[in-house]
Image (cartoon, rainbow, N blue to C red; front, side, top):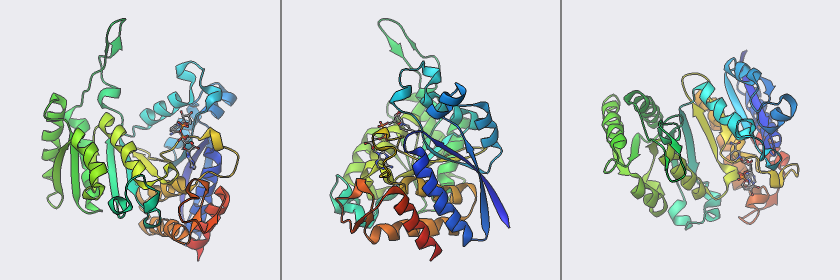
Length: 355
Ligand code: NAD
């Protein structure tokens, strides 16, 4: 029987609670799909600092690289906020992404029909939204040199090489090939030289995907269009800072941060994680929504393991649980028939899969 090795990084706050539910669902889907998983628990974040003095122990990097994929919960919390920057949980995560070379961040924003009224936008605007932001993750202005500050000035540099643009553009086009075959590339080519190179390079890559329709949009317009008519988008291809902002904007279309998964992929191992943080305010209460993490496990099956049917089973089971009216606390006011705990939601989704 085929067996996949999954590195589990549960992290801090609600991390362990939500990852446990994703494991429950993964085991359920494995049991009816002819493969199995072995898991290895690895430390990262505040819990890693408490035990080892380092938020990202070397063992976590080494063992993650030996696995087929990483399923990640969340890290961070007030307890560690006053540590020196390199000891903070968030530094561990940034270093981890860099070590794994995950240059593409994939963030789907899907509005479940049953939750169209959970969005702050009108239900008719968001119902049917199903888009994917493909964001470059380890280049651009967050990493460009020179950067610095003195008393009177601060400066950062937005820089992209043709190669960096090419590899993220290929990701976007390959993803579009399995979706509606539309890519909208977001830039600021009317003002920025780096965006002119971005646009020129994306057009070059597009020639290799003649079936995919490519359009371009300035980032300010894209921010507006996402609110005005989000259904016009399928794959949105962006650089690091624009993607950071637009993917957070897109995530709010769906109503709860507890629903949205993400994947960070590159040449080596992919990291699959919910978009939210460690939610210390609700940790340990059994009320966190595990759906974002369960949906991240589904992305892991699809993008890392090529188990598309199994991923579909998870996605359908999530939809079924929501359409039957099961809700965790965060969605309690939206047509809930039954309020369930974190663990109950995991079990309901796992049961739908097994049935
Ligand atoms: P957060 O995402 O943890 O929480 C924001 C709000 O959303 C909170 O009210 C929280 O209760 C709620 N929430 C989040 N996930 C939920 C879920 N699954 N179900 C129900 N409600 C949920 O953001 P924050 O409060 O700004 O940050 C808390 C900690 O998380 C900080 O230390 C921050 O640095 C860290 N953080 C980590 C990551 C990561 O691990 N990738 C990402 C963002 C923030």
